[in-house]
Length: 113
Image (cartoon, helix red, strand yellow):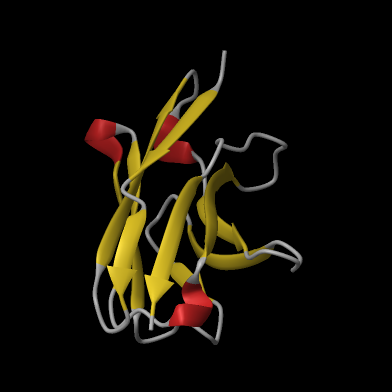
């Protein structure tokens, strides 16, 4: 049974930082590309960042230079380090296995101005 469990969300002031974690089980983590998506209230879900099995990454333009995605295959965990947070980063953040329908339940990030 595949499970993705996100953690690390919370309330932070603009300019602050948070680190999200997503731990996977039920898969061979190291061979899978992983991604973070987010969905703000009233908006469509969007891709934030992705990391391939080899470690290459890509980012949405709105977060490039502020967010960093990384992975620890020994811990079956993917991270999203978010710096210089803005109120427009407020959203529910979801971890996914790219190319599949497996999604976590999400963790809420709220950035106050």
